[in-house]
Length: 331
Image 1 (spheres, helix red, strand yellow):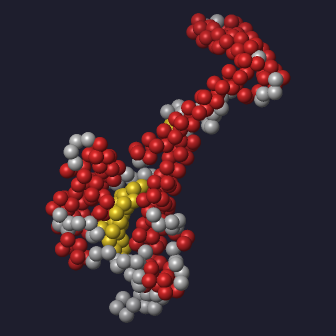
Image 2: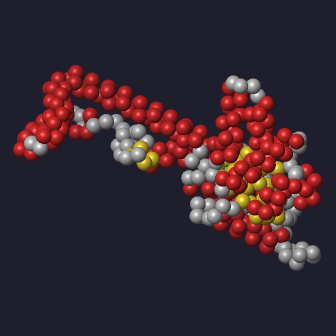
Image 3: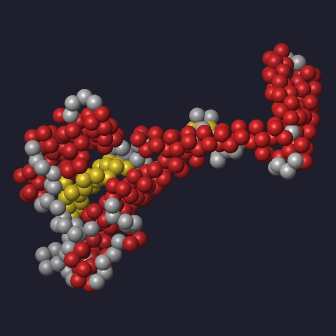
């Protein structure tokens, strides 16, 4: 899981618990002020719990039975008083949003479903802010925008080719948890659907629970630069946290490789990112408009060796979808 998003979810859960504690305290004050006998009953019931624990340690079974009977009688009287004065029986049992974990987020050391739900919501919100695309999904990917006439060179139509690409991306997202480490390189001209399908994969994988970071190559390498060159302090710490998040997330989607400014440092940082994630067995998807020749010219042999040897290449073909949509009035 993404540490930053988990921390956000935990903080939200803590806020929920704090409000529940405040509500519970207010309810007790309300009841005790109107029905002082309930306070006396609660004190006696609490005392019985301590006595029962002591009896259990000393092996006094007969005493424990007597204490249990008295406790049940007191609880019955307490319930009568609450109902008699217009409150439900469970009014003082805690105003928890999740009774299962009492809003701690954990049950016997395991994450509760309520905290997992908050984490999923935080990840979805974070992805939506990063993607800035809308609500792209596999169900809205339109293969009809690709030409169904066979390409003279390959004999395969762009639509048939992209059906295969779509299938690979769809299977990758649906079976992300179960597959062995696999990385994808989406390559093709602008407007062919690389960013769209990357977003679809990001949303589906995030929905399943793994941590997903979606960023442009320029933004990722900028974070590496800021971490390296910034002086010690908040700016450095923020950049370091961002780099750590990109290195450690379950799936990193690096969009628009080739749009970043190329320097010796950025080449080194890109190699560190790609190689480090490969070594750790973490999955990465890279999209680029660059041709194979342009990539060879732009990046080091070490980078190209990793991309060519460890990534499955998915060539995107066809005509610019953005232009097609505009021509057909689909925007």
